[in-house]
Length: 343
Image (cartoon, rainbow, N blue to C red; front, side, top):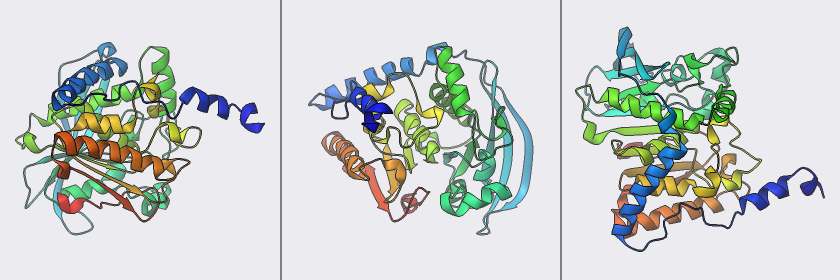
């Protein structure tokens, strides 16, 4: 009876967990798969409401440069703060971390998680409030890529870090939910704006003297979701590393993923995260999750393994099977860096 009173059963009925998402690939050949990818990306661009975002000229302004920094491991680097125009009325602040020695000339985008105070947490500028969560989540995975020699770009996602306007005094919160409610009332959604801005960040990176044929994107938790979306929607990303966010969306109903950036009208009826991963093929795709990560849903890892099997099947049939890798790590919801040796 309580299930019916509080509406959970009603929502599960609407979800129809066993129904194949509308946009799932149903073909049997590599040619059909290629056509499906192109068609689905176009449909998702419409669902993300790219057509409603007012484009603008790419203007880049350097506002800060600090030349003599070191990571905790002693790796020397330079940090540059850029402001880049992404759409009419929007400026995205981005830290660029440049190795002082042993750089490999390859760009990497590191997308922050929720609760990291945006890009600041990514570069180790963690407040006392945030430091309580540091060991549990690990914010500074941008440094993992920097110490591998990558030139790393750490943006503030809209609604987080310096781009918060509502919950400005609550570092562990973002403005995602309020922003998404407002955007949905205007016929748009926050995830669409986020992916649009990350694509504009790639436009900016293309102006640098860096090897765009090897562009990497990494992210944990909400940053992992955005990394997956970006890999699906932009072929300029060549390698994607998703940590702490790969599970069936329907299996998390009324349990997790409550942040507003997760919600787009009709999304759960048409795709699941395996479909985004399949759209990313044939990119190198590395996915890790914690065995005890509660974001995985009511059935723990069962739904995760099913999604992984679906993606693995596509890579084995049509691409290089070694370019898709998945790992379960011992622990909860955090960045593990299991695949860093691949970089």
